[in-house]
Each structure stands twice: as structure tokens, then as C-alpha cells.
Length: 387
Ligand code: EGV
Image 1: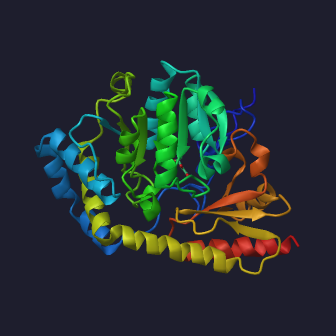
Image 2: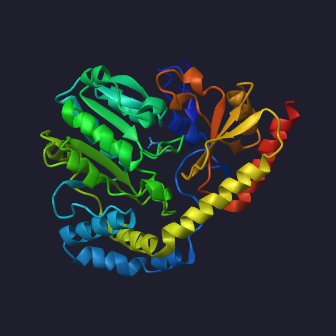
């Protein structure tokens, strides 16, 4: 009998014929030149380091104070840092989860109790379609172009029970403007479609830091938003996802949440409160500058290489996409992997038609500048040697 193939010490299920993005990210986890996953792996800033130096005090506070108070403070501080002032803290409609993927699983199960089909933005990170499909939902492709250019086709909307949009999107960085969100929410209200957003990357982009809940509530639509602290701060994956929902949702989301979780650790909530307070008082400004500088390292490092394009104008999220005009992104990925440099091929982001992602890969920018620069020089050498 042959053993199951493995990545490190994790077996991989080849049932679907190809690894998912997270399995590809896991292959990179021990490499110093890991530009694969979108988690925050840069160094702590001086003010973040101060928080970490106070961990014993945070632990003690977390052990002593009522969970409800700590949770409300964490929600309030985090939403405030995002420009989300109608934060709903204390409303009971903010559910804390160990990760946004856990929130996603709870949302998918919740939707599956009453709807069959969901429109999903294309492309987007593949664990979103995989979780939705895993809960039995039928996916309908929603391209970014119609999404950002005006009203959706009413016939399209009547064919689904929910719409799911990642904004800013991963990997494209496109942001749903306040005007377009208002329009989409209005249409969802008219057709009684549940509007679901994943805003995990909005901490990176001021253009996504308007009051989403205000806009959604004003439309009267039924809505759910997944928020996430996981991409923003280098807290070694101590993080939370928040599942926020409208008072008219009318679905058993609380019950399904309770099937999976009692709650998250108050220690993590207290840590999030502290990092969010730091973010609101200059931390996010530092983060935006840091990511912009790292984007510069990638773009400058690849300037003049023929046959490639860095994708996206004025993109602010912590990932960059590079398109290879000859479509050889997967080959370059394999070649780099041989040198222990890891990027992420984009095929699987294009969940409805992976071929459309064949020509590009994604580079994670939430990394210390030095190894990032070194990896980009190796990437440049690999690209130039192919010509
Ligand atoms: C990104 C990893 C999960 C995900 C990374 C991600 N996969 N949770 N199954 O957190 O962009 O690299 O979203």
C-alpha cells in the first residue's frame, strides 16, 4: 500500500485533484522566504511590542473581569479603529469566532437552512467557495466588473438567495465603494436576498473604512458581515473573526454558532482591544506606510523585467499580484519552490474557472522588508533566466 502524500507532516487529500490555496501556503510555512500566506508576519512596531511586554497583566485582567465587558470593549475598540462607529456592541449581534473561517463556516451552515444558491464574487480566496459548497450551497459566479460598475441584473438576483462579496477583495484589492454598497444593499432588499460581506482586509484601506452597518441598515436588507483581526497584526495567529448580523436576519445564526463555540478566549479579546486601540492612535497609519513600502520593494525589484505586469492600480491590501504574459505562473512557482522561495499561484482564487488564474501569482507583503527583498531578487533572477 502506498502512503498518502504529505506536506510536511500533514497528509494531503488529492480527492479534488489539486491542492487548495491553504495547502500550498502550508508548504511554505517553514521557509524564511515565505511570501505565500496572507497572515501578518512582519515584526512588531515599538508600541505593539509594549503591549506584548504587558501580557501577564493582560492575562490577569482577562481572568478577573466579566467576559461580557471584555468582549464589548474588544468589539468597540476594533470597530472604532475601522471607522465602523455604528458598532452594535452590546446588541448581541456580534459573534466572536476563533478565525474568520470559523465565522464563514457558521454563516454557510446558517444560510443552508433556508437557501439553495448564493452568488459569490470571482475571483476570491478559495476557502470561501469550498466552505459554502461544503455546506451544500450552489455557487453562482459574480464577476468584479458588474459588481463595481452599477446595478446587478434583477434576473440574476432573483436566481439566488444570498450574495457574498469580499471587500476589499483578496487577491485583487478592489473595494466596494459606499455608493455601490448602498446600491447593492437596496437591490438585495428589493429581492429579499441576504447580503453577506467579508471585510477581513479593510484595516489596510481607508476607502473601506466607512460605516458599512449604517449603509446596510438604512437599506432595510438582511445582512451579515464577517470582520477579522487576523490579517493585520503580527500576533502569531492570536486573532478573532466577528460575525455581525442585522436584526431582521431571521436565520438561526445564534443557534448554529452555539453548536460550534461557547466563545473565544477573553485573553485574545483583551489582546485585540489593546492592538485596536494602538491601531486607532497611529498603528494603522504605520501599517499602511509599511505595506506601501513593501509594495514598493516588489514593484521596484521587478521594474524592467520583460513580460510581466504588477496588477492593480492603487491597491492597498497586504498582497500584490504579478501577471506573467506567457501564462507560466505555475512553472515559475515550481522553480522558485526549488530554491525555497514561496509565492502563491492564483489558479484557485478563480474558483469557477481556475484557468483564468493560470497567468498570475500572489505575493504576500506583510513580511519583514529584508527577506522580502531577498525573495524578490530571487524571483527577478528566475524570471530573467526564462527569457
Ligand atoms: C490568505 C488560510 C484558511 C487563510 C489565508 C488567507 N486559510 N484559513 N483555510 O487564513 O489570503 O492567505 O486568507
